[in-house]
Length: 101
Image 1 (cartoon, one colour):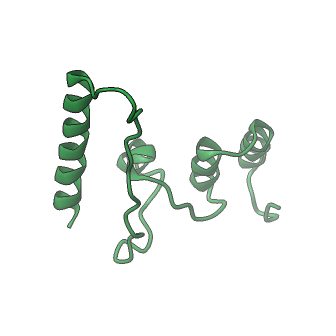
Image 2: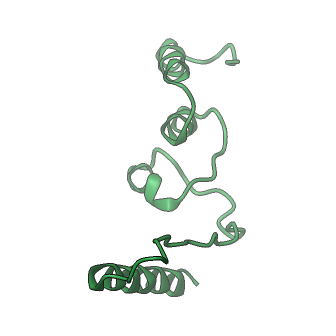
């Protein structure tokens, strides 16, 4: 539902977004149109935040971190490549979490 003072360009943009379906891209597009608040990972909206299309709300109340799991077959021997990747991923998340605090 749109307010009566919504411009014609906003109406056509929001109708286009609605036809694309739902998902993270649609949520970001709707938030950029001023249609509500969204909670998404920062990497999904970094360009919108940088350009000023979106602003962070409730910065003092961030969501709880979610666990990240790496799944692999335990029935096989862990390859050196996979071990290096898992260690790299763990280090990336450790650095990002420590810099966020």
